Length: 447
Ligand code: 5AD
Ligand code: SF4
Image (cartoon, rainbow, N blue to C red; front, side, top):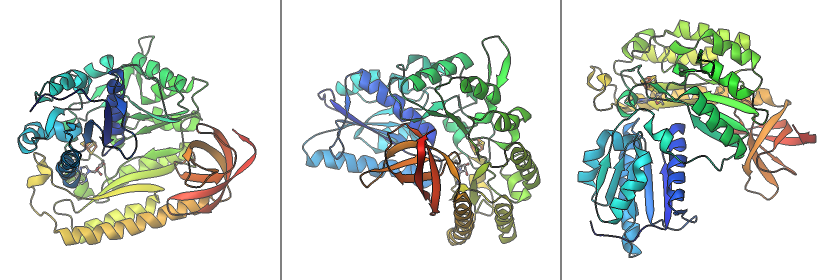
């Protein structure tokens, strides 16, 4: 690689989960500290960071086509953009990326991105570097302080996973479970609120496993952290994601009943409705124990909206076992959901299991499952019509005077009228669509 001029503009493209969105924002802050500015919309950037996802094969393959496209666009414009690959593909396939994609000069894993500025200095000199070290928690202390925030902000409180579901790469790419310290999180939340956040979503691959010590030296879990953050009068809403059914304790169930700022929404993946499949997935819950857990949550917070993740076509899944998944969907009536075809991931136990399901069978099952999930989402949205609720205004809509925000149940809501980004308004829900609701501002709408 030849020496290049230091980049003036950057673009961070994040794929996959919300934690990648958080990491992407933090990388952008690091680059901003170096005086590099975001590339204007529609213009090529001098430095592109691809913050990648390795959870399914399709997501991982996308990286190589993106690298090709960026390099080609650069060539056509007579420029050579610097390309960094970050995120979970970087962690899992660092050396392979370097070998396969000469246009890439930096590969940096999710635990090492605080060192991106130093790598960039080397890249400008023409060196290529890979950093996939996994020092627990080290990056957070070295990241710049939060200065700007959207009304709805993410805050990573926990990373990694010790659950080892047999299909999942996360325990390998994000490493062992670690919790960020209580005091550090309270501090970062305060800064986010001072920077404009009205809502904070606490993030972790296994967020319900978060544990820490409060300032009095007492051990607290997720519910204790939520209670502490809720004390900030300028923070209106708290959410958390993603949880594992095995780690949901009485405290967090109770918190949904007693902490008004904890929004009535729970993302609790079940993956399958078949006990045989759940066991083969190493999920440590059954369909029944999952349903019982939801009953306790619903008793604490009757208007709780539920969301889940599903995998169809796990190795050995029979038609009858797939129908058990449809049954659990019928029982729960999810307000929202994410569903995927099983994708074998290198190095995971399920990838070498017998009975890999044919792609056309997976396609057909996914279609049936998604039809059921769409039906329930529509029904949930329709049941909301007529309610007046608080909406956090997050952005402008397409038409002038139109605004978009989120209901407490994480539905997208749009309305016309006088508002500002970051306002909490009262709106009456008028009409339901599959993915959003139309609403009308109420008199004295500021909530
Ligand atoms: N194939 C398909 N879906 C997967 N997920 C995780 N690993 C795989 C895989 N190998 C899904 C799970 C998880 C969500 C984040 O992605 O449903 O909850
Ligand atoms: Fe992956 Fe979630 Fe299972 Fe952890 S709990 S191994 S992140 S699916």
